[in-house]
Length: 177
Image 1 (cartoon, one colour):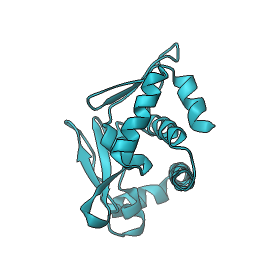
Image 2 (cartoon, helix red, strand yellow):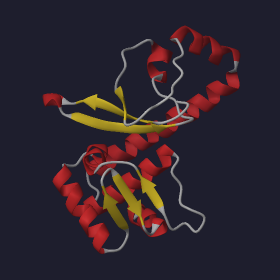
Image 3 (cartoon, one colour):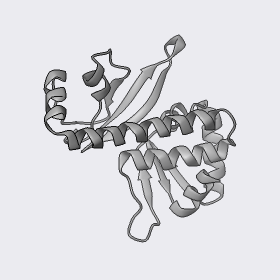
């Protein structure tokens, strides 16, 4: 992606759409299909105007073969994604909902390249509560109640398509506990 933001969405049973990832400028998506020739596992949905470069799979593979150092970087990206998927799977099977929401916010911020300000006091994610709920695998109502608890603790402020962290270090600690 050159600019903008896209959501990677997959359809679940019953037609429900699930948020898999949010990609921003400088990130890539669709590389799994380019690597193995398989069908795409998700659709990309743009929130606003985006600019992307589409690379045919044969060109992508040839470029990776000609630049083996990039293959190592690609493996690291894929390893990070697998690690995050494993963490999400473990969390869905037993973590406290407040911890899951905090961990989901932390992971989304890391994946979208959103970082705290210079005083580590503010992080703003452009995401709806429904998308966050899909991301962590919980219904929207439970996610909304949990965000209400985080608001009451003074950790977040929510608005339309936006979740602002008021205390990033505390929210990260909560997600790790």
